[in-house]
Image (cartoon, rainbow, N blue to C red; front, side):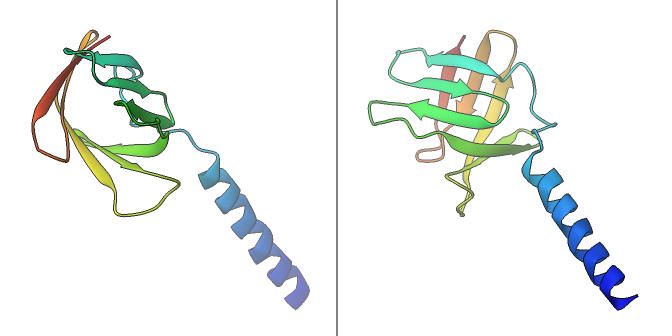
Length: 110
């Protein structure tokens, strides 16, 4: 009976870890997904259902992200602290995003 309980606990733990590792971001607004360009064309933002990639002259680094309310939290390979981007406006063709460095809103279009 001890062996069965021990095996059951390990299998259940493995299943839970496997399910959490292979999930999609269900709270991602589908309007957010796509390729966005800043108004001055200096920043290209590519957002998929799993990755957030900002190209601004440096080599682009895809980051994992998740959303809470109107804030996008990004991290490189799960490292913390998270980088926060606040969505001020979002529709099918326009995105206004407050950047974390200088708290200035940058306007993007698809």
